[in-house]
Image 1 (cartoon, rainbow, N blue to C red):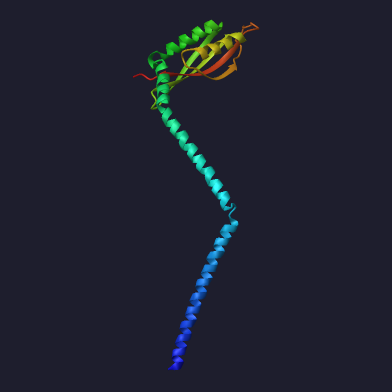
Image 2: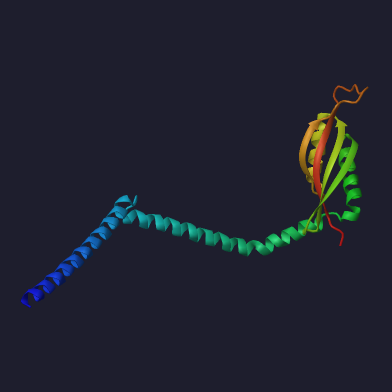
Length: 191
């Protein structure tokens, strides 16, 4: 029986030693993983703190800007409403724009030969965007005066493009140019 009890103690001791070795091996692996992570980390703890401080400053700046935007929203909304209310109503917009451009062209000393409208409703906004194509003729200075007049007009114009138009047959004025104008304007949708 002594021999059996020694064998049991030996087996128990063997499992205890294997358990301790397994625990040490697991701890060694954990330390190796931790060491590798620390060694591959590109930043020291001070550098990480500095990077996090910069990130915190950026987040605070974003929050400050968001607060400023939130405070400015009523004024922005009022400005948008002012712009929308300054637009001619759609039912009279075409005649308002035509008369305005004719008057600006007359004051600039040039002739508007053609003027065409291409409306597009902007869904959900209560505004109609109108593309305008015009052909004007006059001298260079009058074209510049036309553009200045449109800029100063009570109506809103966006000049998308200018290009030289083909000369008409029999048009022999050397100082005269024909220009294609591509514009946009806006009307308030009918209520």
